[in-house]
Length: 204
Image 1 (tube, helix red, strand yellow):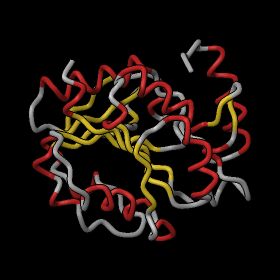
Image 2: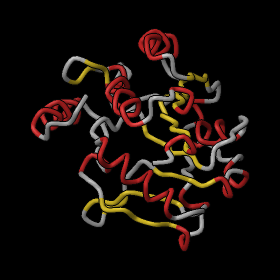
Image 3: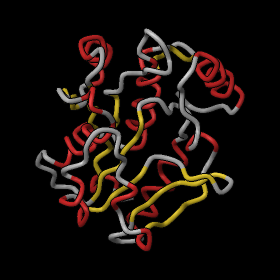
């Protein structure tokens, strides 16, 4: 698997407005924080930590402290309060030599290694196509975007997502597990993540 041609970007700058006072990605499920759970799986499928990037913003110092042991690239998005689009466009403004970028929301800890690998393999096989998971007809994350669209997405703003700016004809939807549509926005969903993580035997 030509994993080294794809940079994995974890979007971890959000304000967690719906969750409450705490930063949801720093909450724990089964002994590790949400962001650590995601990073552990990414490192298991790609041992080259130069291929893994985290974009921080809200509670940046706490995030930095949590991720110190991981030795992955961590960037601070000073415009994080403007929304998701500012983090997505941030990475496109840096120098990237890879063929594609996988965007992983920092509040989706149930994406399995199997699904990460499936999406990456599809990207490698289908050159210049945008790869998205789906589960029971629902579109999920992470999204993999090929290099030909990097310039197009440099100016995303506020809470704009990348999808609406990309040509629908170039999307390939890959059937994946429930973890690709599950995110944490509430305390209830955090509890659900803990239960599902054990029940479905995800590797942390």
